[in-house]
Each structure stands twice: as C-alpha cells, then as structure tokens.
Image 1 (cartoon, helix red, strand yellow):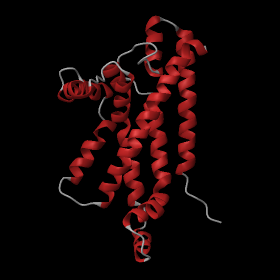
Image 2 (spheres, rainbow, N blue to C red; image 1 turned 120 degrees about the vertical axis):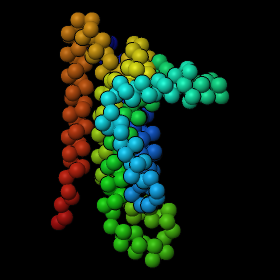
Image 3 (cartoon, rainbow, N blue to C red; image 1 turned 90 degrees about the vertical axis):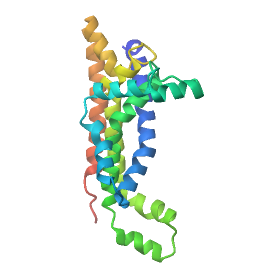
Image 4 (cartoon, rainbow, N blue to C red; image 1 turned 120 degrees about the horizontal axis):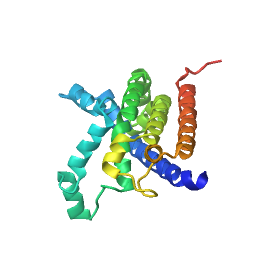
Length: 223
C-alpha cells in the first residue's frame, strides 16, 4: 500500500502545508485589516475575497490558467522576469489550494479579531504599549483559537482539493498527482483496491482534523 500511496500522500501534505502557511500570513493580515479599518469598498472587497468559498473549483482553476498560463498576464511576467512557470508544477498546486482555501482562513480570522474586546486593547495602550505590542500581546492571544480553527479547516480542504488543482497542475504521478487526483485516476483505471485505500486514508485524516477543529471551537470553561 505504501509504495502506491506514499508519493500522493507526501505531495498532498506538502501542498496543503505550504498553502496553509501562505494563507496564515495573508489571510490573518487581511482579516485584521477588514476587522479594524473602515474604507470605501470594504464590503465589496470582502465579497470578492469570499468568492472562492462558493465558486466551483474548476472555474477558479480556469481563472488561474487565464492569469498564470503561458499567455496570461501574470504567467508571462513570471516567465520573463524570473523564469518561473506554475503550470503543471507542484507550486501550481499550492497556488490552487491557497486560492480555494483562502476564505476558510480569512473569514474566521476576521470574526476572531472582531470578537476581541476593544477595551482590553485600549487598556494596554493606556499602560504604554505601542500598537505592535498590543497586537502581539493582547489582540492575537485573544483571537488565536478562531484563527487556528480556520487554519485547520483550510488544511483539510487543501488536502482534498481536486478541481482547481487538476486544471492548473494536471496529474503527473510523483510530481503533481495529489491524493484526490490519485483517487480519480484509480477509479478511472478500475483499480478499486487502490481507490479504497486512498479514500480511507484521506477520510481518516480529514475526520481527525475536523475533530480537532470542533475541540478548538468549544467555549473555554472557567473554573
């Protein structure tokens, strides 16, 4: 089993980890800005950033192809300036997973920051803490549970991402064939034994992550 499953599993874990790490940096930053800043177009920006949550993954994959393909605006720029092409690479799979799962990090992060009591932050400022210290020592510690829950959900979703990944990264065994794509290929080839193994594996991993998420979502009990 391991000889057939390990390449797809290791690639899926690598893609999911990289996509989640990038969304940790970008999603938390955007969530904090939208939670604390008021500006024209704020609701429109929120809507656009949430679109990947409801849009079909194949449509997202098509948009990524248009933008990052060989003839796309961003794709041509990356190729010309850095000699980098994301199409049919594991980095392209990371990009697809990151876009698809971004709302799962951004929305919980924004809600977590909005749930922080501003009086606690103001008290820290009165005590002389600069804004950066207020964020790291007050705001973030109070919001971390919501952020971590979103990150776990995003990791599980990235682990099972299929449509957008297949569109932009394809299915190259050992290079871009993630677990979900490997399941599809196994079913297409009539290899029910391998398909069952892959399905059981990814189901167990996702169930474990959801259990951890539910544990984090429970309100803390004070003694």
